[in-house]
Length: 324
Image (cartoon, rainbow, N blue to C red; front, side, top):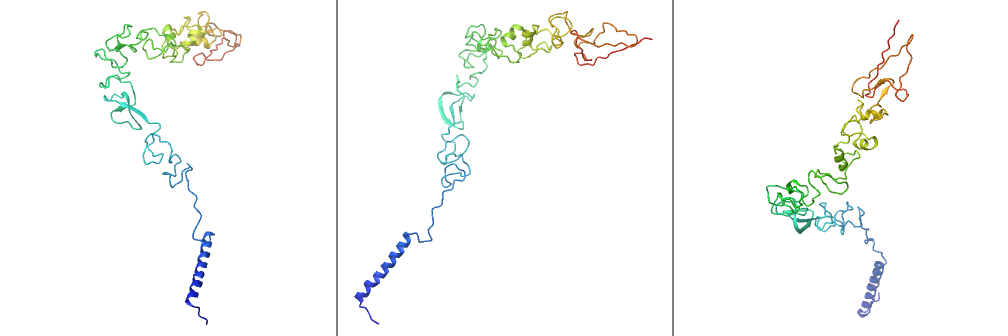
């Protein structure tokens, strides 16, 4: 065997090592190392655009970083705080007397009410729990309890009614006993209803009800089967009298029977038998006589055939007699 001198063997060995190193580096750069894998795609289970690794609740699409907070008791924007700077937070004012009405500027904006605060505004005396907008006035107390600018025993609008008995002591057109005016937006008689309203749906507003003397909360004041509005308008009858023409038949029965409820000579009949408008029985006005058995039919005042029942819904019995 030929032996190389030490000075000649060392360069050859270094060249061999370097060649192997270059080969491994080339293999690594070409992706030949099977131990490395491609990046895994981010998971967004709730589809809200925020991956699971940054979404604090990836099962709820209404929760993700950057979303707007609302007053719902959840951390919707994933900042670790609940309901802070919520879009629907309430403005709170100081309510020292605890009457539910605040005074002054807003002192806090939050979902929950701070101690000693109220969301309603307008307290004219935050040291008196009996004083707040809409509170009842007291004739014996020299204070403005309902915050309308008037004192209980005084008559601020000079309408003849003191504030404690007036529904609006700043408006001389509003006081108990006054006559309502239609469509002026004012409760003129302090009955809790504005003049233009029709609370019972009878076709008459509060002013018209007052003029007619009818009940503004009862559609048919005289209980004759006709609404107060129809009586005052279409039929021309008296909404306070169930028998306007005094013929013994109610206005409703006459309208049902196609007779004139304002004409005492015109009232429901069946044939020659007068109907007593559900107040009694049908009274015969005559008899029919035949040689063997009578043959006849019942007709109304218009000549039309009628059914054998009265306007009360009762069956009409016909009594046939014969003589031999």
